[in-house]
Every structure is written in structure tokens, then in C-alpha cells.
Length: 251
Image 1 (cartoon, rainbow, N blue to C red):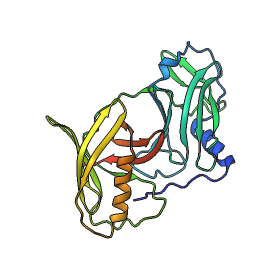
Image 2: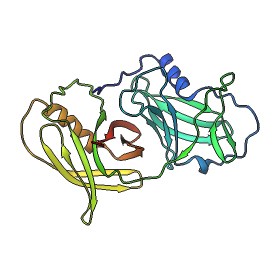
Image 3: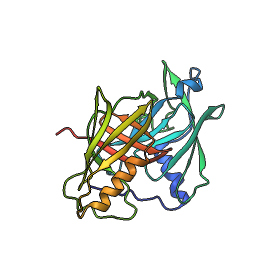
Image 4: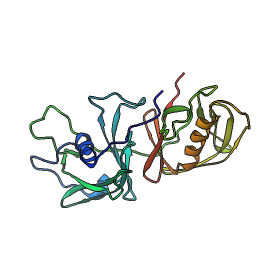
């Protein structure tokens, strides 16, 4: 299982990554009127092409939160800051760890038959540009396993059993339980819209070779303050920073 995503080096590559993800801004043809409120709460995804997926989710893109914040989906190398829609188009503000001052990217959008999408790339009509998809908050019930978790200190993954968490909803409310690889844990979970608040967590006190990795897993669960549930993938964020991806355990 891969748990590290390479940080893109150099500002030129930062802009290149945005270009590959979001495409050209050149638009053609008349468009129906687009209102800013139509974009709030929408998800924009495109298939990952020409590179292997680091987890089980084969798309990447971004989510336009209703509060004006921007969250990247399946992208750890960039952190979204904010979005707005004005006479220029859809303006995305992002930054990287190396370049915290960030930069803006302007996308040209088109609306046809009620569907809002990015304007097609000139000369590449065979490529379908990403379109807006309304995303509503759902309770991520079930058992979840780690798909991608950044591991900057390269802590050992030599755990005794594969880490997982399980979310249940019953008369006592939402509960979260699981195993971090060495110890079992459990606690409460509060969801409100896309906000996430877990804990306080109780954990057993066993020792084992994968304890550092378990600590990292538990830290990320504690750090998370929002989430996106997209198909069978659960994305956890601290602010607008993606910190953990979990996949639905269907076994």
C-alpha cells in the first residue's frame, strides 16, 4: 500500500500540474447565464490519465464549498484556499508547501442545457471537459480502510493487522470504532453538513511494531474537521488540506 505522495518541486511544475488537471481556459460558443450560487456545493472530477493512481480512487479534481473555500480531491501536492466566480470566470486560489503565497487560476465555464462544464480545450474536442456535479453530505456508514495517508516521517507500516475504522449509526448516535494496527479504539462522531468531529477516543494500550503508524492514523482522525464522501471513497480534511483518504471495505 502506498502512503506517500511526492510533493511537486518547483513553481513551474506547480503551474503545470494545475494546467494538466484543469485544462485550457479558452471557451467557444454561446453560454447560458451562470450564477455563482449554482457553483456552490459542486464537485469537479476528471479521470487520472497517464499516471498510476496512488489509491483506489481513479479521479482527481476539486470541490467548491458553499463557504467559498476550495478543497482538492485526491491531490495532496496542492492545497486549495478559496474560489469565486466573476466576470473573469471561475477563479481558484491554491498554494503548495513550498510556495505558500499561492496563485490564482482562472477557468472559463460554459452552461448548455442546464449543465455547467469547463469550456472545451481548443483542438482537443475528443476530450470531455469536467462538469459540475452537486455533492450532498451523507453519513459514511460502514467499514473503512486506509487508501492514502501521507507519511512524511516514513514511519514503519509493520502493523500487526491492517488499520481500519467503522462508523455506525444507531439509537445512541454516530459512533466510530476500529483498530489502528495494534490497538483498538472507539469514540463518538458528530457530523453537521460536511463538518466532522470525532472523539474523544478511547484506545487500548498494547505495544507493537506498528505503533508509530497507528499514532499517525489516530492523529489524522483527530485533526480532521471536514469530509467528502464520494462513491466508495472518504476524504478527510483539516481546513482545506487533504490529510487522509479511506476506501470502503467491501469484503
